Amino acid sequence: MKLLRRKEGPSLDSRLAALREAAELAEGRLPEQVVSGARAVADRAGVRRELSIEHTVAALAGATGSGKSSLYNALAGQDLADVGVTRPTTSAAQAALWDGDGAGPLLDWLDVPKRHAADGHADHAGTRAGTDAGADLSGLVLLDLPDHDSIRLSHRLEVDRLVEQVDLLIWVVDPQKYADAALHERYLRPLAGHRDVMLVVLNQVDRLPAPAVERCLADLRRLLDEDGLAGVPVLAVSARTGQGVRELRSLLRERVAERASWSARLAADITAAADHLAPPEARGEPVAATKRMQGAERALTGALSTAAGVPLVVQAVAKGHRHRAVVATGWPLTRWVRRLRPDPLRRLRIGGIPHDRRDREDRQIVGRTSVPAASAVQRAQVETAIRDVGEVAAAGLPGPWAASVREAGRSRAGELTDAVDRAVATTSAGATRRPQWWRAVNVLQWLVFATMLAGVLWLGGLFAMDYLRLPQPPLPTVGVVPWPTALLVGGALAGVVIALLSRLAAWAGGRRRARRTAKALRAAIGQVGREYVLGPVETELAAYARFAETLDLARGKT
Image (tube, rainbow, N blue to C red; front, side, top):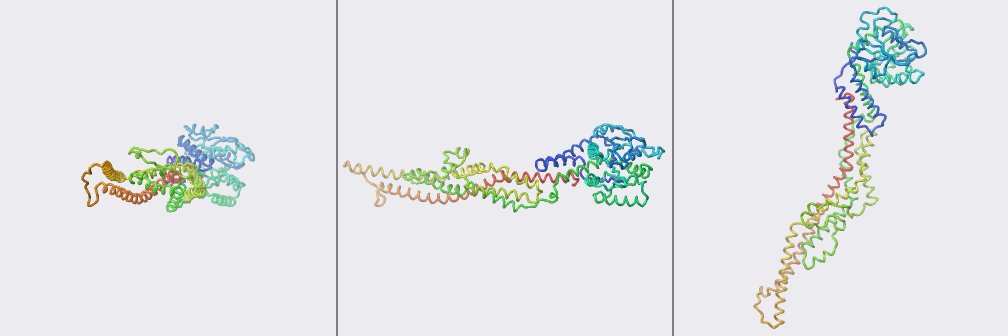
Protein backbone atom coordinates (compact mmCIF):
# COMPACT_ATOMS: atom_id res chain seq x y z
CA MET A 1 0.00 0.00 0.00
CA LYS A 2 1.03 3.63 -0.44
CA LEU A 3 1.82 5.19 2.91
CA LEU A 4 2.75 8.59 1.51
CA ARG A 5 -0.08 10.36 -0.25
CA ARG A 6 0.74 13.25 -2.50
CA LYS A 7 -1.53 16.22 -1.94
CA GLU A 8 -2.44 18.86 -4.39
CA GLY A 9 -1.25 22.28 -3.34
CA PRO A 10 1.59 24.76 -3.62
CA SER A 11 4.97 23.44 -4.69
CA LEU A 12 7.71 22.86 -2.16
CA ASP A 13 9.72 25.71 -3.68
CA SER A 14 6.86 28.18 -3.30
CA ARG A 15 6.23 27.04 0.28
CA LEU A 16 9.90 27.43 1.10
CA ALA A 17 9.97 30.93 -0.41
CA ALA A 18 6.81 31.81 1.55
CA LEU A 19 8.40 30.67 4.81
CA ARG A 20 11.46 32.83 4.14
CA GLU A 21 9.27 35.84 3.41
CA ALA A 22 7.17 35.22 6.52
CA ALA A 23 10.33 35.09 8.62
CA GLU A 24 11.51 38.39 7.11
CA LEU A 25 8.15 40.03 7.82
CA ALA A 26 8.19 38.72 11.39
CA GLU A 27 11.64 40.21 12.05
CA GLY A 28 11.38 42.66 14.93
CA ARG A 29 7.74 41.79 15.50
CA LEU A 30 7.92 38.25 16.85
CA PRO A 31 10.44 36.76 19.31
CA GLU A 32 13.88 36.36 17.76
CA GLN A 33 14.03 32.70 18.75
CA VAL A 34 10.91 31.92 16.72
CA VAL A 35 12.11 33.91 13.71
CA SER A 36 15.59 32.39 13.77
CA GLY A 37 14.04 28.94 14.07
CA ALA A 38 11.98 29.52 10.92
CA ARG A 39 15.04 30.78 9.08
CA ALA A 40 17.02 27.75 10.19
CA VAL A 41 14.30 25.46 8.83
CA ALA A 42 14.27 27.36 5.54
CA ASP A 43 18.04 27.18 5.25
CA ARG A 44 18.09 23.50 6.11
CA ALA A 45 15.32 22.73 3.64
CA GLY A 46 17.09 24.72 0.95
CA VAL A 47 20.28 22.71 1.43
CA ARG A 48 18.54 19.33 1.58
CA ARG A 49 16.62 19.85 -1.64
CA GLU A 50 19.87 20.61 -3.45
CA LEU A 51 21.45 17.34 -2.34
CA SER A 52 20.71 13.83 -3.59
CA ILE A 53 16.99 13.19 -3.89
CA GLU A 54 17.65 9.64 -5.06
CA HIS A 55 18.57 8.65 -1.51
CA THR A 56 16.29 8.39 1.50
CA VAL A 57 17.95 8.93 4.86
CA ALA A 58 16.23 6.91 7.57
CA ALA A 59 17.34 6.97 11.19
CA LEU A 60 16.86 4.41 13.95
CA ALA A 61 16.28 6.36 17.16
CA GLY A 62 15.51 5.02 20.58
CA ALA A 63 16.40 4.74 24.23
CA THR A 64 19.18 2.80 25.87
CA GLY A 65 18.51 -0.94 25.68
CA SER A 66 15.77 -0.68 23.05
CA GLY A 67 17.80 -2.77 20.60
CA LYS A 68 18.42 -0.14 17.94
CA SER A 69 21.85 -1.43 17.04
CA SER A 70 20.63 -5.02 16.87
CA LEU A 71 17.84 -3.96 14.51
CA TYR A 72 20.35 -1.89 12.52
CA ASN A 73 22.53 -4.98 12.07
CA ALA A 74 19.53 -7.11 11.14
CA LEU A 75 18.45 -4.68 8.43
CA ALA A 76 22.00 -4.20 7.15
CA GLY A 77 22.54 -7.97 7.00
CA GLN A 78 25.82 -7.83 8.90
CA ASP A 79 27.20 -6.85 12.29
CA LEU A 80 28.07 -3.21 11.72
CA ALA A 81 27.22 -1.80 15.16
CA ASP A 82 28.36 -3.00 18.56
CA VAL A 83 25.49 -4.35 20.59
CA GLY A 84 25.19 -3.68 24.32
CA VAL A 85 22.60 -4.69 26.88
CA THR A 86 22.30 -1.89 29.42
CA ARG A 87 24.87 0.80 28.61
CA PRO A 88 24.96 2.96 25.49
CA THR A 89 27.33 1.53 22.93
CA THR A 90 26.63 3.90 19.99
CA SER A 91 28.55 7.12 20.59
CA ALA A 92 28.23 8.60 17.11
CA ALA A 93 25.85 7.99 14.25
CA GLN A 94 26.92 5.57 11.55
CA ALA A 95 25.38 4.88 8.17
CA ALA A 96 24.58 1.74 6.20
CA LEU A 97 24.14 2.41 2.49
CA TRP A 98 22.27 0.47 -0.15
CA ASP A 99 23.65 1.60 -3.49
CA GLY A 100 25.32 4.59 -1.92
CA ASP A 101 26.83 6.10 -5.04
CA GLY A 102 26.23 9.84 -4.93
CA ALA A 103 25.26 9.88 -1.25
CA GLY A 104 28.61 11.31 -0.14
CA PRO A 105 27.66 15.02 -0.15
CA LEU A 106 24.43 14.18 1.67
CA LEU A 107 26.28 12.33 4.43
CA ASP A 108 28.88 15.09 4.58
CA TRP A 109 26.06 17.55 5.22
CA LEU A 110 24.66 15.23 7.89
CA ASP A 111 28.20 15.00 9.33
CA VAL A 112 28.14 11.19 9.46
CA PRO A 113 31.70 10.08 8.63
CA LYS A 114 31.28 6.41 9.55
CA ARG A 115 29.74 4.66 6.54
CA HIS A 116 29.21 1.04 5.51
CA ALA A 117 27.99 -0.70 2.40
CA ALA A 118 25.02 -2.82 3.49
CA ASP A 119 24.59 -6.44 2.42
CA GLY A 120 20.90 -6.59 3.13
CA HIS A 121 20.55 -10.20 1.99
CA ALA A 122 21.35 -11.87 5.32
CA ASP A 123 19.02 -12.18 8.23
CA HIS A 124 20.00 -11.79 11.87
CA ALA A 125 21.60 -15.25 12.08
CA GLY A 126 23.61 -14.95 8.90
CA THR A 127 21.35 -17.22 6.81
CA ARG A 128 19.86 -16.09 3.52
CA ALA A 129 16.65 -14.18 4.12
CA GLY A 130 15.54 -13.97 0.54
CA THR A 131 16.83 -13.02 -2.84
CA ASP A 132 15.30 -9.57 -2.91
CA ALA A 133 15.45 -8.50 0.72
CA GLY A 134 18.11 -5.89 0.19
CA ALA A 135 18.08 -5.24 -3.53
CA ASP A 136 14.81 -3.30 -3.34
CA LEU A 137 16.27 -0.98 -0.69
CA SER A 138 18.52 0.65 -3.30
CA GLY A 139 18.90 4.32 -2.31
CA LEU A 140 18.36 3.79 1.42
CA VAL A 141 20.78 5.41 3.85
CA LEU A 142 20.10 3.93 7.29
CA LEU A 143 21.54 5.68 10.34
CA ASP A 144 22.06 4.15 13.77
CA LEU A 145 21.78 7.02 16.24
CA PRO A 146 23.07 7.26 19.80
CA ASP A 147 20.53 6.78 22.60
CA HIS A 148 18.27 9.79 23.11
CA ASP A 149 18.36 9.18 26.88
CA SER A 150 22.11 8.67 27.07
CA ILE A 151 23.93 9.84 30.19
CA ARG A 152 26.28 11.71 27.90
CA LEU A 153 25.13 15.13 26.72
CA SER A 154 27.04 14.83 23.44
CA HIS A 155 25.00 11.74 22.55
CA ARG A 156 21.70 13.50 23.18
CA LEU A 157 22.78 16.54 21.20
CA GLU A 158 23.78 14.29 18.29
CA VAL A 159 20.34 12.69 18.33
CA ASP A 160 18.59 16.08 18.43
CA ARG A 161 20.65 17.34 15.51
CA LEU A 162 20.01 14.37 13.24
CA VAL A 163 16.34 14.04 14.18
CA GLU A 164 15.92 17.50 12.62
CA GLN A 165 17.73 16.54 9.42
CA VAL A 166 16.89 12.97 8.37
CA ASP A 167 14.12 12.14 5.89
CA LEU A 168 12.50 9.24 7.74
CA LEU A 169 12.36 8.59 11.50
CA ILE A 170 12.10 5.05 12.85
CA TRP A 171 11.49 5.12 16.59
CA VAL A 172 12.56 1.89 18.24
CA VAL A 173 10.94 1.17 21.62
CA ASP A 174 10.90 -1.86 23.86
CA PRO A 175 8.13 -3.38 26.01
CA GLN A 176 9.60 -1.93 29.20
CA LYS A 177 10.03 1.74 28.16
CA TYR A 178 7.64 2.38 25.28
CA ALA A 179 5.59 4.67 27.54
CA ASP A 180 8.62 6.69 28.68
CA ALA A 181 7.44 10.29 29.19
CA ALA A 182 10.74 11.70 27.94
CA LEU A 183 10.27 10.02 24.55
CA HIS A 184 6.68 11.18 24.12
CA GLU A 185 7.04 14.72 25.48
CA ARG A 186 10.42 15.57 24.01
CA TYR A 187 10.18 13.92 20.60
CA LEU A 188 6.94 12.24 19.56
CA ARG A 189 4.43 14.88 20.58
CA PRO A 190 6.38 17.85 19.11
CA LEU A 191 6.76 15.87 15.87
CA ALA A 192 3.05 15.20 15.48
CA GLY A 193 3.07 17.08 12.18
CA HIS A 194 5.68 14.65 10.84
CA ARG A 195 3.48 11.56 10.98
CA ASP A 196 3.96 10.92 7.25
CA VAL A 197 7.70 10.42 7.72
CA MET A 198 7.63 8.37 10.89
CA LEU A 199 7.51 4.68 11.84
CA VAL A 200 7.35 3.15 15.32
CA VAL A 201 8.87 -0.25 16.00
CA LEU A 202 8.13 -2.25 19.16
CA ASN A 203 11.32 -4.31 19.43
CA GLN A 204 12.14 -7.35 21.61
CA VAL A 205 8.64 -8.79 21.34
CA ASP A 206 10.21 -12.26 21.53
CA ARG A 207 10.49 -11.71 25.28
CA LEU A 208 6.70 -11.52 25.67
CA PRO A 209 3.91 -14.03 25.17
CA ALA A 210 1.62 -13.30 22.21
CA PRO A 211 -1.27 -11.88 24.32
CA ALA A 212 1.14 -9.49 26.05
CA VAL A 213 2.49 -8.34 22.68
CA GLU A 214 -1.02 -7.47 21.56
CA ARG A 215 -1.69 -5.53 24.75
CA CYS A 216 1.58 -3.63 24.38
CA LEU A 217 0.81 -2.77 20.76
CA ALA A 218 -2.70 -1.59 21.68
CA ASP A 219 -1.37 0.56 24.52
CA LEU A 220 1.39 1.96 22.31
CA ARG A 221 -1.19 2.77 19.65
CA ARG A 222 -3.27 4.61 22.24
CA LEU A 223 -0.29 6.68 23.41
CA LEU A 224 0.63 7.59 19.84
CA ASP A 225 -2.94 8.66 19.13
CA GLU A 226 -2.81 10.92 22.19
CA ASP A 227 0.45 12.36 20.85
CA GLY A 228 -1.30 13.31 17.61
CA LEU A 229 0.34 10.50 15.66
CA ALA A 230 -2.76 8.62 14.59
CA GLY A 231 -2.06 6.56 11.50
CA VAL A 232 1.67 6.19 12.09
CA PRO A 233 2.59 2.55 11.33
CA VAL A 234 3.45 0.47 14.41
CA LEU A 235 5.28 -2.84 13.91
CA ALA A 236 6.12 -5.64 16.33
CA VAL A 237 9.71 -6.74 15.68
CA SER A 238 12.36 -8.93 17.22
CA ALA A 239 15.83 -8.16 15.95
CA ARG A 240 17.07 -11.32 17.71
CA THR A 241 14.67 -13.81 16.10
CA GLY A 242 13.92 -11.87 12.90
CA GLN A 243 10.20 -11.58 13.65
CA GLY A 244 8.73 -8.58 11.82
CA VAL A 245 12.04 -7.62 10.16
CA ARG A 246 10.72 -8.62 6.74
CA GLU A 247 7.62 -6.42 7.27
CA LEU A 248 9.82 -3.53 8.33
CA ARG A 249 11.96 -4.02 5.21
CA SER A 250 8.78 -4.01 3.13
CA LEU A 251 7.71 -0.67 4.59
CA LEU A 252 11.17 0.77 4.03
CA ARG A 253 11.15 -0.56 0.49
CA GLU A 254 7.90 1.32 -0.25
CA ARG A 255 9.21 4.54 1.24
CA VAL A 256 12.50 4.32 -0.61
CA ALA A 257 10.83 3.43 -3.91
CA GLU A 258 8.59 6.51 -3.76
CA ARG A 259 11.61 8.84 -3.41
CA ALA A 260 9.27 11.24 -1.62
CA SER A 261 10.27 10.99 2.04
CA TRP A 262 12.74 13.87 1.69
CA SER A 263 10.10 16.22 0.30
CA ALA A 264 7.48 15.06 2.80
CA ARG A 265 9.93 15.73 5.63
CA LEU A 266 10.75 19.20 4.32
CA ALA A 267 7.06 19.96 3.84
CA ALA A 268 6.37 18.91 7.43
CA ASP A 269 9.29 21.03 8.68
CA ILE A 270 8.02 24.06 6.77
CA THR A 271 4.50 23.57 8.13
CA ALA A 272 5.80 23.24 11.68
CA ALA A 273 7.97 26.36 11.31
CA ALA A 274 5.01 28.32 9.94
CA ASP A 275 2.86 27.15 12.85
CA HIS A 276 5.50 28.34 15.29
CA LEU A 277 5.57 31.75 13.58
CA ALA A 278 1.84 32.14 13.97
CA PRO A 279 0.78 33.04 17.54
CA PRO A 280 -2.23 31.02 18.81
CA GLU A 281 -4.56 34.00 18.58
CA ALA A 282 -3.66 34.51 14.91
CA ARG A 283 -5.93 31.69 13.82
CA GLY A 284 -8.84 34.05 13.14
CA GLU A 285 -9.18 37.05 10.86
CA PRO A 286 -8.72 40.60 12.17
CA VAL A 287 -11.91 42.42 13.10
CA ALA A 288 -13.31 44.44 10.20
CA ALA A 289 -13.41 47.99 11.59
CA THR A 290 -13.83 50.26 8.57
CA LYS A 291 -16.41 52.53 10.17
CA ARG A 292 -14.56 52.61 13.47
CA MET A 293 -11.36 53.42 11.60
CA GLN A 294 -13.06 56.28 9.78
CA GLY A 295 -14.33 57.59 13.11
CA ALA A 296 -10.86 57.38 14.63
CA GLU A 297 -9.43 59.21 11.60
CA ARG A 298 -11.97 62.01 11.94
CA ALA A 299 -11.22 62.28 15.66
CA LEU A 300 -7.50 62.48 14.90
CA THR A 301 -8.03 65.21 12.30
CA GLY A 302 -10.20 67.14 14.73
CA ALA A 303 -7.69 66.88 17.56
CA LEU A 304 -4.82 67.93 15.28
CA SER A 305 -6.86 70.83 13.92
CA THR A 306 -7.66 72.12 17.37
CA ALA A 307 -4.08 71.71 18.56
CA ALA A 308 -2.82 73.52 15.44
CA GLY A 309 -5.03 76.54 16.19
CA VAL A 310 -7.21 76.12 13.11
CA PRO A 311 -10.16 78.02 14.66
CA LEU A 312 -7.82 80.94 15.34
CA VAL A 313 -6.40 80.76 11.82
CA VAL A 314 -9.87 80.63 10.26
CA GLN A 315 -10.91 83.66 12.28
CA ALA A 316 -7.74 85.45 11.17
CA VAL A 317 -8.50 84.57 7.55
CA ALA A 318 -11.89 86.27 7.74
CA LYS A 319 -10.49 89.34 9.50
CA GLY A 320 -7.48 89.47 7.23
CA HIS A 321 -9.67 89.34 4.15
CA ARG A 322 -11.72 92.29 5.39
CA HIS A 323 -8.57 94.14 6.40
CA ARG A 324 -6.97 93.78 2.99
CA ALA A 325 -10.26 94.55 1.24
CA VAL A 326 -10.47 97.89 3.04
CA VAL A 327 -6.87 98.65 2.16
CA ALA A 328 -7.49 97.78 -1.47
CA THR A 329 -10.99 99.23 -2.01
CA GLY A 330 -11.49 101.82 0.73
CA TRP A 331 -11.79 105.56 0.19
CA PRO A 332 -8.29 106.77 -0.71
CA LEU A 333 -8.46 109.56 1.87
CA THR A 334 -9.04 107.17 4.78
CA ARG A 335 -7.61 103.79 3.71
CA TRP A 336 -4.17 104.75 4.98
CA VAL A 337 -5.55 104.58 8.50
CA ARG A 338 -6.27 100.86 7.94
CA ARG A 339 -2.67 100.31 6.89
CA LEU A 340 -1.59 101.28 10.37
CA ARG A 341 -3.34 98.21 11.74
CA PRO A 342 -1.45 94.85 11.56
CA ASP A 343 -2.69 92.22 9.14
CA PRO A 344 -4.21 89.37 11.25
CA LEU A 345 -2.54 86.68 9.11
CA ARG A 346 0.80 88.43 9.15
CA ARG A 347 0.64 88.53 12.92
CA LEU A 348 0.47 84.73 12.76
CA ARG A 349 3.30 84.67 10.18
CA ILE A 350 0.96 83.09 7.67
CA GLY A 351 0.89 84.09 4.04
CA GLY A 352 1.40 87.82 3.88
CA ILE A 353 0.35 90.09 1.08
CA PRO A 354 1.88 88.94 -2.24
CA HIS A 355 3.14 91.69 -4.47
CA ASP A 356 2.86 89.94 -7.81
CA ARG A 357 1.73 86.73 -9.41
CA ARG A 358 5.07 85.01 -8.94
CA ASP A 359 4.87 85.70 -5.21
CA ARG A 360 1.40 84.26 -5.15
CA GLU A 361 2.19 81.12 -7.10
CA ASP A 362 5.78 80.32 -6.07
CA ARG A 363 5.81 81.32 -2.42
CA GLN A 364 7.62 78.85 -0.16
CA ILE A 365 6.86 78.64 3.52
CA VAL A 366 10.00 79.16 5.59
CA GLY A 367 10.10 78.72 9.38
CA ARG A 368 7.25 78.17 11.78
CA THR A 369 4.08 80.17 12.12
CA SER A 370 3.26 82.24 15.19
CA VAL A 371 0.10 80.28 15.96
CA PRO A 372 0.04 79.73 19.73
CA ALA A 373 1.42 76.36 20.84
CA ALA A 374 -1.05 73.64 21.77
CA SER A 375 -2.08 73.50 25.38
CA ALA A 376 -1.51 70.45 27.58
CA VAL A 377 -5.14 69.46 27.16
CA GLN A 378 -4.92 69.71 23.37
CA ARG A 379 -1.72 67.66 23.31
CA ALA A 380 -3.40 65.02 25.45
CA GLN A 381 -6.32 64.95 23.02
CA VAL A 382 -3.93 64.37 20.11
CA GLU A 383 -2.17 61.56 21.97
CA THR A 384 -5.52 59.97 22.77
CA ALA A 385 -6.61 60.20 19.14
CA ILE A 386 -3.35 58.59 17.97
CA ARG A 387 -3.76 55.83 20.53
CA ASP A 388 -7.36 55.25 19.41
CA VAL A 389 -6.23 54.86 15.80
CA GLY A 390 -3.77 52.19 16.89
CA GLU A 391 -6.32 50.40 19.05
CA VAL A 392 -8.95 50.31 16.34
CA ALA A 393 -6.46 49.16 13.71
CA ALA A 394 -5.02 46.49 16.04
CA ALA A 395 -8.41 44.99 16.89
CA GLY A 396 -8.42 41.28 16.05
CA LEU A 397 -4.67 41.04 15.47
CA PRO A 398 -2.46 38.67 17.48
CA GLY A 399 -0.60 40.20 20.40
CA PRO A 400 2.83 40.87 18.83
CA TRP A 401 1.33 42.29 15.64
CA ALA A 402 -1.23 44.36 17.57
CA ALA A 403 1.62 45.90 19.57
CA SER A 404 3.53 46.54 16.34
CA VAL A 405 0.50 48.30 14.80
CA ARG A 406 0.06 50.48 17.88
CA GLU A 407 3.74 51.36 17.86
CA ALA A 408 3.57 52.19 14.14
CA GLY A 409 0.84 54.72 14.87
CA ARG A 410 3.12 56.45 17.37
CA SER A 411 6.33 56.06 15.38
CA ARG A 412 6.19 59.51 13.74
CA ALA A 413 4.19 61.36 16.39
CA GLY A 414 7.19 63.56 17.16
CA GLU A 415 7.09 64.95 13.61
CA LEU A 416 3.40 65.85 13.70
CA THR A 417 3.73 69.32 15.22
CA ASP A 418 6.04 70.67 12.53
CA ALA A 419 4.19 68.85 9.73
CA VAL A 420 0.81 70.24 10.81
CA ASP A 421 2.29 73.73 11.19
CA ARG A 422 3.67 73.57 7.65
CA ALA A 423 0.30 72.38 6.37
CA VAL A 424 -1.44 75.28 8.12
CA ALA A 425 1.03 77.81 6.75
CA THR A 426 0.95 76.44 3.21
CA THR A 427 -2.80 76.07 3.03
CA SER A 428 -3.56 79.41 4.65
CA ALA A 429 -1.22 81.20 2.26
CA GLY A 430 -3.91 80.88 -0.38
CA ALA A 431 -6.20 82.99 1.80
CA THR A 432 -4.13 86.10 0.95
CA ARG A 433 -4.91 86.01 -2.75
CA ARG A 434 -6.67 89.16 -3.95
CA PRO A 435 -10.02 88.81 -5.72
CA GLN A 436 -10.11 90.38 -9.16
CA TRP A 437 -12.92 92.77 -8.21
CA TRP A 438 -10.65 94.47 -5.69
CA ARG A 439 -8.50 95.81 -8.52
CA ALA A 440 -11.53 97.04 -10.46
CA VAL A 441 -12.97 98.77 -7.39
CA ASN A 442 -9.59 100.28 -6.59
CA VAL A 443 -9.42 101.78 -10.09
CA LEU A 444 -12.98 103.07 -9.69
CA GLN A 445 -12.15 104.62 -6.33
CA TRP A 446 -9.21 106.47 -7.78
CA LEU A 447 -11.34 107.68 -10.68
CA VAL A 448 -13.94 108.93 -8.23
CA PHE A 449 -11.18 110.49 -6.15
CA ALA A 450 -9.80 112.16 -9.29
CA THR A 451 -13.29 113.51 -9.99
CA MET A 452 -13.56 114.91 -6.48
CA LEU A 453 -10.06 116.36 -6.79
CA ALA A 454 -11.03 118.00 -10.07
CA GLY A 455 -13.97 119.65 -8.31
CA VAL A 456 -11.66 120.83 -5.53
CA LEU A 457 -9.21 122.33 -8.01
CA TRP A 458 -12.02 123.96 -10.00
CA LEU A 459 -13.51 125.55 -6.90
CA GLY A 460 -10.06 126.55 -5.76
CA GLY A 461 -9.45 128.31 -9.04
CA LEU A 462 -12.76 130.15 -8.76
CA PHE A 463 -11.94 131.29 -5.22
CA ALA A 464 -8.55 132.50 -6.34
CA MET A 465 -10.02 134.52 -9.25
CA ASP A 466 -12.59 136.03 -6.90
CA TYR A 467 -9.87 136.89 -4.41
CA LEU A 468 -7.86 138.62 -7.17
CA ARG A 469 -10.97 140.45 -8.43
CA LEU A 470 -10.67 138.85 -11.79
CA PRO A 471 -13.70 138.50 -13.99
CA GLN A 472 -15.53 135.17 -13.37
CA PRO A 473 -15.82 132.82 -16.34
CA PRO A 474 -19.17 131.30 -17.17
CA LEU A 475 -19.98 128.55 -14.59
CA PRO A 476 -21.85 125.49 -15.88
CA THR A 477 -24.37 123.92 -13.53
CA VAL A 478 -26.19 120.70 -13.00
CA GLY A 479 -29.62 122.02 -12.38
CA VAL A 480 -28.94 124.63 -9.77
CA VAL A 481 -25.67 123.06 -8.56
CA PRO A 482 -22.44 124.30 -10.13
CA TRP A 483 -20.34 121.62 -11.71
CA PRO A 484 -17.30 122.08 -9.43
CA THR A 485 -19.48 121.56 -6.38
CA ALA A 486 -21.17 118.58 -8.01
CA LEU A 487 -17.81 117.02 -8.76
CA LEU A 488 -16.56 117.60 -5.23
CA VAL A 489 -19.62 116.45 -3.34
CA GLY A 490 -20.50 113.69 -5.81
CA GLY A 491 -16.95 112.30 -5.80
CA ALA A 492 -16.82 112.29 -2.01
CA LEU A 493 -20.24 110.65 -1.64
CA ALA A 494 -19.49 108.12 -4.38
CA GLY A 495 -16.18 107.17 -2.76
CA VAL A 496 -17.85 106.63 0.63
CA VAL A 497 -20.70 104.59 -0.90
CA ILE A 498 -18.29 102.47 -2.92
CA ALA A 499 -16.17 101.92 0.21
CA LEU A 500 -19.23 100.89 2.24
CA LEU A 501 -20.45 98.51 -0.46
CA SER A 502 -16.96 97.06 -0.83
CA ARG A 503 -16.76 96.55 2.93
CA LEU A 504 -20.08 94.70 2.87
CA ALA A 505 -18.86 92.53 0.00
CA ALA A 506 -15.57 91.96 1.81
CA TRP A 507 -17.43 90.81 4.94
CA ALA A 508 -19.39 88.25 2.93
CA GLY A 509 -16.26 87.25 1.00
CA GLY A 510 -14.32 86.87 4.25
CA ARG A 511 -16.91 84.44 5.57
CA ARG A 512 -16.81 82.42 2.35
CA ARG A 513 -13.01 82.42 2.33
CA ALA A 514 -12.94 81.40 5.99
CA ARG A 515 -15.24 78.45 5.27
CA ARG A 516 -13.15 77.38 2.29
CA THR A 517 -9.96 77.77 4.30
CA ALA A 518 -11.38 75.75 7.18
CA LYS A 519 -12.29 72.98 4.78
CA ALA A 520 -8.89 73.11 3.09
CA LEU A 521 -7.08 73.17 6.43
CA ARG A 522 -9.01 70.17 7.66
CA ALA A 523 -8.19 68.31 4.44
CA ALA A 524 -4.51 69.26 4.67
CA ILE A 525 -4.27 68.28 8.32
CA GLY A 526 -6.14 65.08 7.55
CA GLN A 527 -3.53 64.33 4.91
CA VAL A 528 -0.80 64.91 7.49
CA GLY A 529 -2.56 62.52 9.85
CA ARG A 530 -2.81 59.90 7.12
CA GLU A 531 0.85 60.30 6.22
CA TYR A 532 2.30 60.35 9.73
CA VAL A 533 -0.15 58.15 11.67
CA LEU A 534 -2.47 56.19 9.41
CA GLY A 535 0.23 55.55 6.79
CA PRO A 536 2.55 53.64 9.14
CA VAL A 537 -0.45 51.82 10.59
CA GLU A 538 -1.69 50.78 7.16
CA THR A 539 1.84 49.70 6.21
CA GLU A 540 1.94 47.50 9.28
CA LEU A 541 -1.51 46.10 8.55
CA ALA A 542 -0.44 45.33 5.00
CA ALA A 543 2.66 43.60 6.38
CA TYR A 544 0.46 41.46 8.63
CA ALA A 545 -1.88 40.64 5.77
CA ARG A 546 1.07 39.56 3.67
CA PHE A 547 2.49 37.66 6.66
CA ALA A 548 -0.79 35.77 7.08
CA GLU A 549 -0.88 35.07 3.35
CA THR A 550 2.67 33.72 3.31
CA LEU A 551 1.95 31.60 6.39
CA ASP A 552 -1.02 30.00 4.64
CA LEU A 553 1.12 29.36 1.58
CA ALA A 554 3.92 27.91 3.72
CA ARG A 555 1.39 25.60 5.36
CA GLY A 556 0.35 24.38 1.93
CA LYS A 557 -2.97 26.21 1.77
CA THR A 558 -4.06 27.73 -1.53
